[in-house]
Image (cartoon, rainbow, N blue to C red; front, side):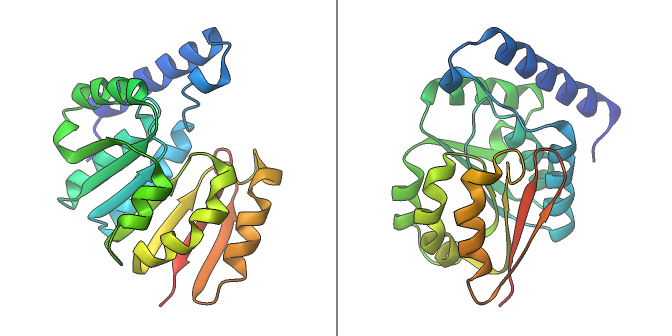
Length: 196
């Protein structure tokens, strides 16, 4: 349950991320946190679906990871979060400790495409996609394979980076067995249901 103490901690972590990005000139060093309303929506989706096997691609400082972990705690689930940057994952681990969520998450510094290719079929209940948008089209076949029937994929930045997401969105919409819609929450969320 999200009590006032947790919500205050989450707000403080988000504020810290905003301050960091204002002071950071290099784009690849920024954390680019999702807005709190996106975090709450992710929490609602995971919590209401009782997802237990949660995958995140794009950890950064772990702000979105925290929302997923908080929801996973209720369903006795686990989050695996992938990011290329071990330095950012160290910060994410520190943030997880602030909410006593480190046991709920495995932080892996790996190439997401290769990791997806090696994963067995259908182990993922929920996938949050917030990484290098140019790679989503390439990843889609693997995402289809690892997502269980009835599972969800949520892609961030569907509206804020619409041009970069168009090809992936069109690819998904053309795939039989998937129902998808864009929602104007935060920076735009493209929600995909594996309707099999």
